[in-house]
Image 1 (cartoon, rainbow, N blue to C red):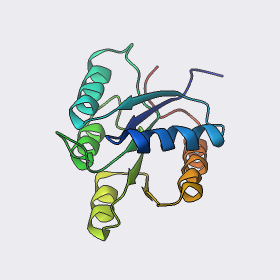
Image 2: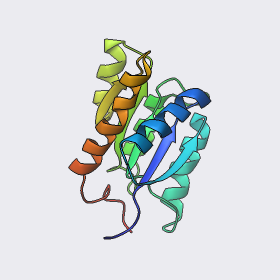
Image 3: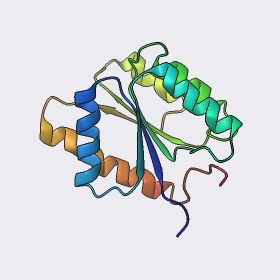
Image 4: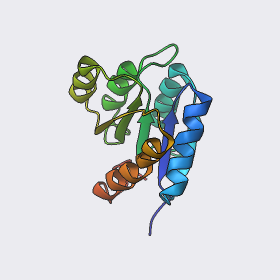
Length: 145
């Protein structure tokens, strides 16, 4: 059945990261989770994936747009330029409802856009969205094993 799926959560809010983990658990998403709380750490994760064939390669990245040090857009642009990580699925998870942000993330290659809702029940729908995205990419992200 191959390797365990790998999900990278790039989110600077501890509360939102906890909600994301809860949504994934409630939707029975089975994956190894890594959490990074700033853009520089996300860039280093991508660089490490490039440099070390044994380093984890994310099947799915849940990416906040407004991150410290590097924005979600800069991270996504770097990811899509990475030979090993370019096929990772990216779901933007953000509080921004800006049409401009949405267009920009689409242009940079995001696979989806989830605006963080104010209600817990609405936020928990994220888990099902992740399940559906992972099902589309049945073959884990194309990261060379």
